Structures are given as structure tokens and as C-alpha cells.
Amino acid sequence: MDVAAQDPPQVEELPLAAGFDPPTRAQWLAAVTGVLARGGADVDTDGEAAVRALSSETLDGVTVRPLYTAEDAPAEVGHPGVSPYARGSRPQGAGPDGWDVRQHHCDPDAERAATAVLADLDNGVSSLWLGLGAGRIAVEDLPVVLAGVDLASVPVALDARAESAAAAGALRALAVNHGLEAAELSGSLGFDPIGLAARTGGLPDLADATAWARRSAAESPGLRAVTVDALPYHEAGGSDVQELGAAVATGVAYLRALDDDGMSPADAVGQLEFRLAATTDQFLTMAKLRAARLLWHRVGEVAGVPAERRGMRQHAVSSWAMTTRYDPWVNLVRGTVACFGAGAGAADAVTVLPFDTAIGRPDAFARRIARNTQTLLMEEAHLARVVDPGGGSWHVEALTRDLASAAWAWFQRLEAAGGIIDALASGLIADELAATADERTRRLAHRELTVVGVSEYPLLDERTVTRDPVPTEPGGGLPRRRWAEPYEALRDRADAHHEATGAWPRVVLVTLGDDRLAAARSTWAADALRPGGVETTDDHGSGDAPVVCLCVTDGVPADEVAAAVRSRRDAGATAVIAAGVPPDRREGSGADLHLDADDDLVATLSAALDLLGVAP
Image (tube, rainbow, N blue to C red; front, side):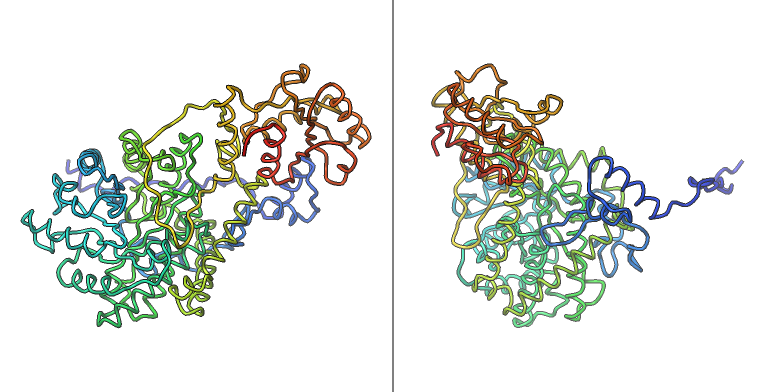
């Protein structure tokens, strides 16, 4: 019997919703309103208040709703690998071999860096991202670092900043010494004078970038000369929209420079690689990468680039800004979620920063986990086998277009200001990013945003991770900020106190009011104090901890609060913190400090440490 000649078996469609009435939005709204009302939320009967209560707003003002329907779907989602490239630059997505696993190396000890490079390449890494220059790998040490690397098969992305021309020349010379032709090299030379100006200030000189772009286009088709690095804007506190708009504006500036130098737009776009941040918001990361390709496609369309060459080459990097020094093990999870978002968002190359990056120079274990995070997602979770996992999702598609629209408006503002270079020089970008950073800090201080292990669920006696220090990044331009820094500064104070005295700053919790609610209020107060490095104990007398936190349940009259504060002072308390007293009932309480869910927690904790005698 010729089995191959037989018709394949027919699979009947299984209608999962058969026998059920189609649900309506009105039914969903009614159900949600009922749940929220039972929880005490003030929601109206038409349900729209419920939608608002469950919606959130990004730092860009983009509303993320709790429910998306077919009405939110775009008219046409397109196909992967074709115009407008929202669904990826290649029809096959990351398959069959997965995306490019790119590991970062910048250890100035050349022999140690060479060992780390080979360990990575032997264990799943497919390309190298090398940080060169002051405080990092010396350009003259490039032959040592790459001595055992097959440059014909391993792409190398250089990041030499002010020494980019010297690094590019060194890589070319090294290829010659390895017996390779220029056409056999692949990767990126990393010229990014505008990104360097963003980091260090001053005006960029694009001459070397354009000259090497012409040379690469003519001699090395697999080697892109220019990198559009958007990380300086992200690390300065910028939002997704600001990062996207700045990236597109930078790309346009390089296209203009290359056009002025005689290169066609079609050839010029092939010389650019874009570097973008991936964060723990997996859906925003997916949407950002998809939106970036939409925006760049539009730029190519306006510039007259053929449709088949308008794809964007993307290098996604897990966010340095989201990493923490305290409880760094949580960074392992952050890197995993960011990598998932980058892979599902169809990035061409992905770098997961080691979990100890915010502490110092990553060790071999941290680098191993970083590369294995990517391998696990590709080979065990099979993420790379699905082309554009978010394609067709009403939520992802709507978010992609919302980001693209807002980023295009920000890009137009930068263009109206004279372009990215003038917008940097005038301070426009710095001011806008600072405003966004301040809003993120405000949300973190008010616990509207969370940094797990630092602003929430900290472990005071956590195992300390120590690493060799790394040189300070060059300054003069946009600042570098990590989101957890305000809370980490509080923990630094508490840790120094612990080291000097052998004990954590301590507060005694005393409850006042409804016994049924007292435990919940004292737990809340303890959780609010812990991010400042403050240890709490139950009320067993205040002799061992002269500062008392009075945990007040709802409805306690102001005079009772004041009486309780006086009683604690009479019992020997040197200071009293009142937790749970709303602002309109604080006057006359006599408390030294108030702690409430609506307060600025960072400022409150700083004041609490002052009360506890902890040195600033």
C-alpha cells in the first residue's frame, strides 16, 4: 500500500463556543462592575467607571485597557517579512535557528575577556558585542580578545564610541591577519556619533561614520557601519515613545548625512542597526519593537527606499535601568521577561545583561545564566518557532499602533526643533526625558509602580553580592538613571547603620482601633517601612526600640489618636509615627511623622530614618 499517495485525514473543526450564547460587552461590564462594587470600589451602573478603574496609563499617556475586542483590530495586520514589517523583518521570523544571541563583553583584562568570549561561543552565544575604549577593552587588545574566534562565522558588533574609527580599522586588520576577505566579516562597526553626543555632550562629527558606511557598503555586505543606539534616552529616564522617536530621528539624521555623501537611500538604510531596550513589561516591549519597524518603514517610504529594503535591523538589550543592586537575583526574572518580549517582538539580535550588572563586573556564573536564559526560551520554550506570537492580538496590535502614532508625533517635534542634533544641543530632549523620569520616580514613591525586592518585598538580611567595580561611564550629556536608585539610597543608609551598630533601624508596631482590622494595618505599615531598611517588631514595650509606629485603623477619632500618641511618649517613646491617618485628620495628632498609602513613601522613609538616628 502506497501510504504517501493517500489523502491526509480530515480534521473536523471543533466549535468551542457551540451551545453558548455569544457574550456581549454589556454582560462583561455588568459582571466586572459587580465584582468591583463588592470590593468597595465607587463604580457607576453603566460599567464605564469599571473600565476606567481597571485601565492604566503608561508614562506616554497611552491607555492600556482591561479588554480589547475585534473592534480594536486593525483593518490589515500584514504578513511577517513584508511591508510594513510590523510583524518582523523576515518571513520565517527567528526560525529555524532562533534569533542572534549576542553577549556583551567589556573587561579591560584582555586575557580574561578572551576566556569569557570563548566560553560564551562554546555555549550558545552566536555573536559578540564588544565595548572598547577607556575603562573597557583597549582597541590594541582586540587581537588578543578575538584570537580564538572564527570571524568568518561569528558576527562582531563593536561599540568603541570616540575610538570607533580605530576599532573599525583594527577589526579589518585582524581579518586580514586571519586570512579573511573583507566580504567575510559580519556584524556592526558601531559608529554612533549622535549617541555619543547624547551620552557625553558636545556636537557630533559624522564624517568617520559616513566614510566607513561607504566602505562597508562596497566591501562588506554583511557588516553595518552605523548603530542607532537609543539606550542613552531610555537610561536617562525616557519613555518608550521618547526612545522610539529619538531612534527614528537619529536614523533620519544618518540617512541625510549618507545622502549628502553620495549614498543612495536604499544603500544607506542597509548600513544602520538600531539598538533598543527591552523591559519587564513584555507587551510594551513587543509593541515597541513592532512600532519601531512601522516607523522606519514609513521613513523608508518617504525616502524612496524600495519596499523590500525598508526592514529595520534590531538589537534588543534587556534594560540596565530596570536592574537593582539590592536583591539582584530578581534581575534574573527581569532579564527573562525582557528577553521574552524581545524575542516575541521579533528582534534580530538580543542581549540579556547579567543579573549583577548594576553591582559591578559580571562574573562567569552571571554571564552563563544570561546566555542560558535565551537558550531556554528558544530551545525549551520554543519561542523562536512561532512567527510574531503577538500578531493579530487585539491588545498587541492596538498597543503597537498607539505607540507608533505617539512616537511619530514626538519624532515630528524633534524634526521641528531642527533634528536630533539640535534638539540635544538645545536641551529639549534632556528636559523632556527629565520630566518623564520625575514622573516615574513619583509613581514609584507613591507605589503606583513597583520594583520587586526593593520598593516591595525587600529582604533585609539578604545575601550580599560583591563584584569588582567597573569604571564610571563618561558623563557630560544625558544622565544614566536606574529606577530603583531612590529606594536603594535608603537601604544604603540602613545597611551602613547595621554595619556600624550590628542592628537594623527598628520600630515597634502598636495598633489602635478595630481589632478585626488591626492585623492588616500593622502588616501594611511593616511592609511600607521595610523598603527603607527598617525592621519592625510587635508591641512588647518600647524599651528596646524608642520609636513607635501607631497603626491606626479606619474611623478612629482624631482625639483618640492624639491621646494614644501622648500615651506612647509617656511610656518612653522618643518619636511616634502614625500610620493610616488621612491628611484631613492629622492636625493635632502630635505624631512626629505620618505614613499613609497616598504619601510619598521615599520622602516618608527618609524622614523615618532621620527619626531613628540613621546617618544620611
